[in-house]
Amino acid sequence: MSFSHVISRDSSYSLKWQKYAGKDILPMWIADTEFRCAQPILDAIAKRIDHGILGYTLPANHEGANQAVQGWLSKRYDWKIEKNWIVWTPGVVPAFNLACKAFCEPGDKVLVQVPNYPPMLAAPAINQLERVDVPTIREGHRWTMDFEQLETLAKDPKCKMFILCNPMNPVGSVLSETELKEVNRICRENGVFVCSDEIHCDLILDEDAIHLPFSKMDNMADQSVTLMAASKTFNIAGLGVSFAIIPDAKVRAKYQSAAMGHMPWANVLGLTATEAAFTLCDEWHQGLITYLRDNRDYLHREINAIDGLEFLLPQATYLAWVDASGLGVELPQAYFESKGIGPSPGADFGEKQFVRLNYGCPRSHLEMAIERLKA
Image (cartoon, rainbow, N blue to C red; front, side, top):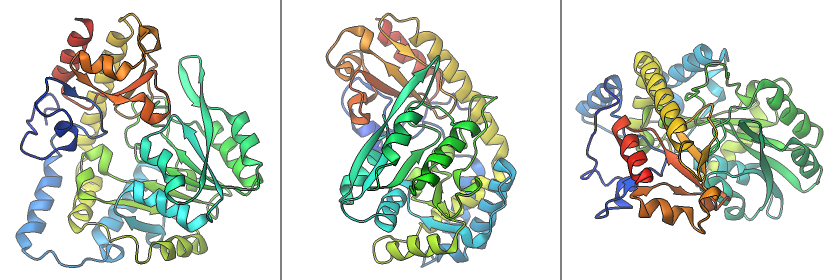
């Protein structure tokens, strides 16, 4: 696999590329990568299609996919889960919206870290809930959440849930065990349910960082759900599959009950792809991590050499949270687009003087972006 290979997406109806169709602007916004899927995934999908019948498939009965999830979590996170803890969903965004529906009542408050990616910021209002923002703060050369504010806000009896994002999107931090224990303590003491979005957990670039699934933590199995997917890591987001891990039977029943009549089953080809990703693609995955780490380091070095821009080295994801406040422009997004680069607007995440750049792409794309920024 050559992650440097450039593949045209002109004929694929790619949302990422259609945004700037007809313009000389390099799309570096939405969080999908420019990498061809691992061949075992493509082979598995082709084999399933060759069978010729794509009828109803109950995800809970897909032994291959369920065993693959169990094996992956055991191997990657030393987390031994039962098969019935897995609740398949058609995406992490529907999954945390479902958590809002299952564990809150209209008018309740939901804690959300800011900045954060737009669907998570939108979830409370969609479900007739009030969003309460937990600030992200800078500590040296790393972003983390403001735990003092989290504790203050969690004391409000109307705060029923915290939608945690770990690794953090867009800032790229991996919450340490100490930090997660603090979240655990605060939420446990104040009766706040935790829905942990961990979709980027398989994209840890910092060799010293360790991801800890939230529902694996002591005392939180009955007060949390953990959301994961193969989609970001293996570039299969278009197949519409993710999964929630819910150890507690009562919590799981409540979550599944809220989904009835509202949420479709996970896509059968997505189940096939997830099984292949988690069982046949370890070498591809390691190659991806190495390539992304090199891309991250290159972008970090080059961005920080440009006057007016600052980028703190992220521990995970393929997303760069770039502070453009030093440029002295009102709209950094417009500035980047004028340079021929299309990032995600920081305003969509809650910080208008930032942009988010996707470096899950061939190095040549990054070199083009840097050349344009310096011009």
